Length: 211
Image: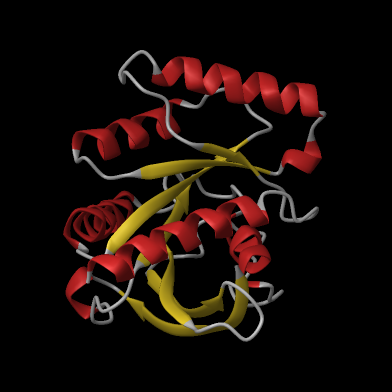
């Protein structure tokens, strides 16, 4: 996939204010400070498409980005949305705001009819975290398709990353029969970019063939 255009579209405080669901859509979410903005910028090929902040909890709305891509130079354009969702699990945010965020995210994930896939970001530097596992269990219960992206792989030795990935997948087997697709990523090293974009490309094709 070749990204031809990536622009900020709109930030919405609730599902009903999101853009019309007229194209395939892919949401990115993870624990606060997991490197989501950096990964979105890597995928788009633009350094400042999503604002990178050193302060967790900055993303507070449903952020839509308009994307246009082609499969080859000179090929036809495919239009789709990339969505940046608020991070979960940031303790310094007031409980009332966390509740509002939780409702907004749940409504979006269960009610957005053109949502093709949720990319759940997991920090590869850490052993399995309860909050990540609980979020994935909620996706399972709502039958929402997802892919795991293990981030910041450049910050640890490959053997450590592989060990943490294996441990996380082992935890998933305690409540689901089949393992999800996983991709190891690093925004610093451009690692995993082609795999994520190839997956989106295949889903875009399936979406437009079905409409």
